[in-house]
Length: 295
Image (cartoon, rainbow, N blue to C red; front, side, top):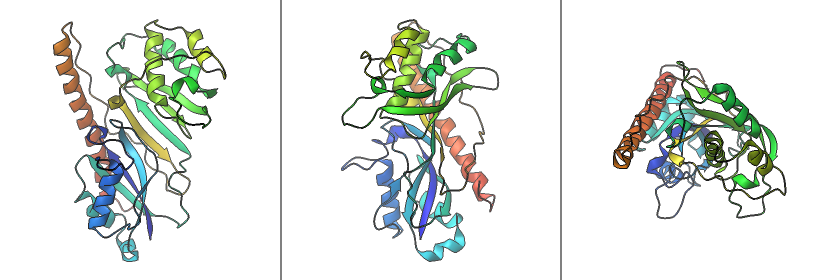
């Protein structure tokens, strides 16, 4: 029986999501757990690949389990895997799917990036100005300047939505971006570009030109992976998953003029960031365990 699991993870503990020989990966940990349970002998397939350091609030994977487990879905899957997996991975939903389900074919992938954690971020930026900047990426463009091209794949992508990520007290946290598919490092390069426009290191015209096929080559930099979150997935073969948010990321420590102090503070911020994500995951799991309904 094929089952789609929904799970979260902290990226800093893994060398990416995709399995790699002799390295700790999310897929590798899932496969080890399934092997101990004598499930999924042909391996585990993951919906969305993420790089080392990138966190996920929602990802999917496809596993094979004995037919008898169907009577105890999702609780049997959740207990079986969560009892074995490290605490940095949390399985919080599971459902039976058809044999022809292609878990890779998500219809919409949503990422969030915490721009407020970047060193050069300006906390007093005008929200209207910010919206004008991020709107430059909306629609269909050639993102060849936002991808380290190592193959012949098309760099044309359609951004279906890009909006500010704002807290309840109107703190500008970052941005949320949606597309059917992203290029490698695309969101992190967009994040770096946004900060550079805000700091007037590059112009709006530079960004517009960079999105034109055959245009000038630009290097807008690469924002850190630790503040990127695979936030939500929509898949036609799976039930609709919750978009409920239980809490907001904690405010960062204010930077100082001392470089060493700042390096210590940023690591403290990272721990707070991970604790917040794990709390979100725990609440998603708790909500599922307390209900026999799908999200």
